[in-house]
Length: 261
Image (cartoon, rainbow, N blue to C red; front, side, top):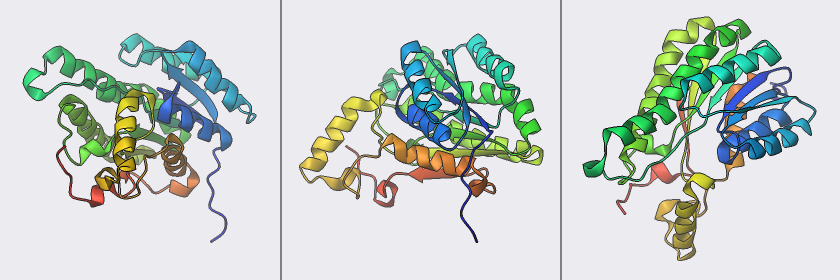
């Protein structure tokens, strides 16, 4: 076997939630491997920074200010991408949200909002992009789930349930769309250094500084670039037979018995 092929040259990658965290790291990694980008998020200035980073690799980067919780914005992401590039090879459903709430206090409005952002937006955008992904003949959808699919986290039940749903629609899409040569894969990170959980990262690192390693046997927090590396691998020719699976990236955290904090 020769050199493993992770080139994404001439591919077009759509990335939601691209202005920070895993989305930003993935956009940079896609660009470094040759993919042109369509990057979407709500913060225009941050998107333009990511586009500048990507273009330094010699690729094109289309920025789209959008809220994935809004149907018209999902359509805008698809339409503007197709107008610029004429096709889509990779869809990374990364945008997400967390709302702190114990189940006894959970409201329908909060539950609906979390599922709309974390779950439905990915399903809907995949529906919109499906014709282009089918035309590509080796299209892939990557859904960023969470290690919360493995065990509950008290206080963020709606988030955990949305991620379990996301993992399961990954399997359904892989089953239904596989004959069209569209692969669908889930990536489930553990605590990762992102803005959305900045306070938790600080708490976990403080606990590990005190030699409390139950949070992770590797004694550190995951970095966004480590998740991006896995995303690039499954999206590339090297991952061409990976389909319908969930890949937990947690430094061995799930190998331990979960401890209720």
